Length: 130
Image (tube, rainbow, N blue to C red):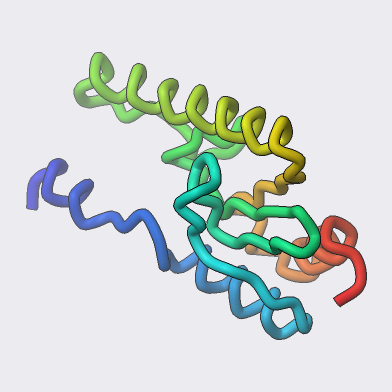
């Protein structure tokens, strides 16, 4: 299979990391809405009564600083470099727009899921009591 076919197969929602975070948060007793199209960036999880949103970002697609999977592929750098940079810029704009709309946002990175207890504590701190 060539690279473009591989990239087409990657989903934007219901990814493995997103599903893991959703199971964790639901198990903690929180209830949420998914992918609200009326909010900038269509956050993965939305907590309307708390005014908070959570994004679950893949380290490659959103270029997680310092992560070993966040690198520009060696082939076709002329495409991938600007593409991944645009993703980062879009994320920043969406976060700023959410903040100006009164929403607080949290990003959970794919690599952070290796330590699920740390993620659990971070979510608890961000969302408050269930």
